Image 1 (cartoon, rainbow, N blue to C red):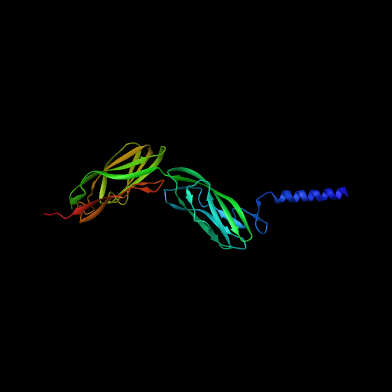
Image 2 (image 1 turned 60 degrees about the vertical axis):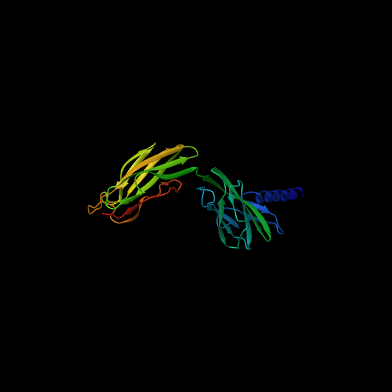
Length: 276
């Protein structure tokens, strides 16, 4: 008889041990149930994290999580960050068998944050709490602008003109290696440049000297860096001096910090008909 009781006790102990291990958790409700919570589509409540890191500015909306309700009933989901830099529209209702992309609005200040997202799921017969994604969020501490240093904003058609503009890069954070891209349209040519630091390359698109000029500035940005670019109107393929028609011309596009997609203002010039 002692042997029988011993076997029963052993089986019971193994049952408890197996029930509390692996990817299984027990959740309370009117009916206690065991649900498998993993990041695959076969789970009762599945999730995936589309991004591991994201660069944002205040007010940006990003998709941070995808939830799938594989329960046999509808459920509501409440998403909570452990750092209060993301705002969610809670609750998110997901019908049985459906998925939803969960979006958040960034409301933090400048800096870098690692945010862990916790999901509380509630349905008619139970509830669950799931630790999901850890997302690295960076609010760039960078500014870029373009200033016209010399040259006229209004010129006459068909006359050679010169301008110098400056790209100003301000970094309020730690030093960072950045690439700044700028494009000068085909009506102009780049005839010189001068930078505070870093390396500058200018490439010509199109055939010969007829295409637009692409400027790449690689710089280890400290507090303030600048790049001065000197441009002039170009001779067109017919041997005529630009500008050939009146109107507004984009002197260059907005310069862009490639790593962050942050763009500056553009500069324009107006070509007027000659009075003579």
